[in-house]
Length: 326
Image 1 (cartoon, rainbow, N blue to C red):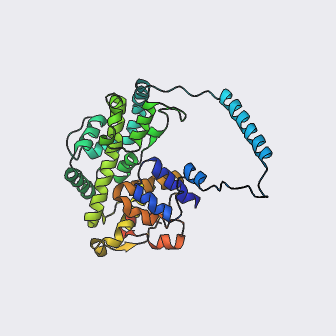
Image 2: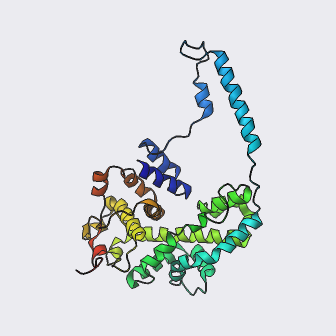
Image 3: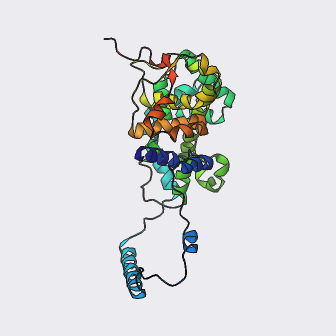
């Protein structure tokens, strides 16, 4: 149960679960509904206390102690100062060079669309590319094998921008803007963050997050529309990446019940062990970004190992040549 709870928390943090998906998971017992204090108070019986309840004197004494403790805590805690937009933007710019090696796969993918001199130009291209152009680039990648999926997935799964930019305790409008961007809020909903988006750091971060999601969405569209394109040796011993493999397994398995085209593909159960931990969270996140709500019913069965593994399939070609010769 804890594993699926951690996965859901990761997905919520990244803004990948819609209200409908959260309600689905809540109905299956994986998401706790938000407690409404007013609703709880409304249910309190205002009548006489029962004999089992503490008397008024004990209640008043407990409340007095809580107030004193609260006052002492308030005096000892100093609220962290709010970070300004300029400082957060400067921190993003300072971190950017250390992110670029991890994001080389996005630059290589963008070059399937046209010339791109550097990562920032590539991200603008991805942001403004039409769905049709992105889908064609995915098809070209699958047919040509370049860039390698391992390299691309390293960039798509990158989330290093969650650490090192602002302290966890940081607050203020600029910090809220930064976290809203990481949560994948689309441009139309970022109107109140207009000032921040005029700063280079925020603008580049926005393009990065949206670029990652645009490419994943294109892969998901092609997986749903042309699964036969994925029926090839995507993984070998040298090119295997667990997050990529399991992202595609989850997405392919989620789409399989409604896919007539996949029936012509030779399928088998995945041959790899699930990665676990942060890698598993990243794989589920990519799968949700690819095929959206189709993944939720699969995720809801994650704790029932027999049922869950009985729902997992992938093209047999994915595991051809995967292992070293004896």
